[in-house]
Image 1 (cartoon, rainbow, N blue to C red):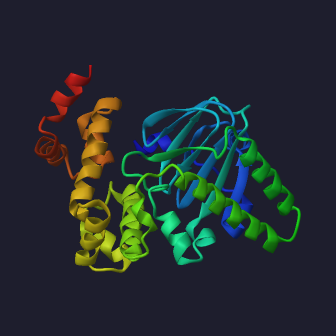
Image 2 (spheres, rainbow, N blue to C red):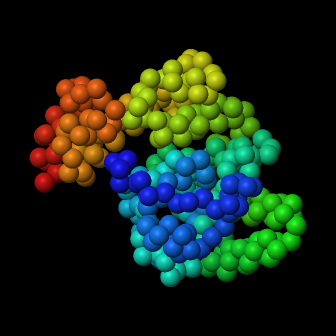
Length: 288
């Protein structure tokens, strides 16, 4: 639930100033008073790791092997486990920092950050180990001591190199097509907004207004990108969150209904019955 993730990472001055930062994950946790729960907010994150560790993204726990990079998009709830003393770097950046060309936009709106199968994309680092990636980080740290303009250019190139490494592990990637990039971009921005607003806003018109496009255009965008209408995606998101809350939380049904933005427990129960096929109490009974 939203109350679980109230502890947010206090963004560094550098991230505020230029839209980019690189930190050891242990340092981030220490700055966060040793609390290990974060939200990516409007930032894209790339984790480069030498050691094995566990993290949970949107309530799903993942065991990640050392020698991989992890790509996480905006508006994700993240929990880090047993990582304080490990060599794990976090690169965080805003869309405004990276998105300078149409090719940059294609990268940001590809399945590297918007994987339809998982909230994260895991990519083996280029080469047999993490040596090349840590040389890249060391190089970037040296640029940080130079002029800010040089550091910004080096940071952009570092991000591009890491995303290109991830592309080596994408099969049949259709995001390389320039045609329809605006549609794909709108569809992915809709998903980011939905992750943020689904509790309070369940109408397609809200998201279309936020994107400054018509409801019809938004449906065309989601149909092209995901083969589904915007309404279907909203329903699937709310359905998933309902089921997760019923199974994993100890809240009463009334409390869950309130947390997920339903007017009352009756509306919540009707939604669950219609879209999952069982009453909330039946789903909870099957969990135990």
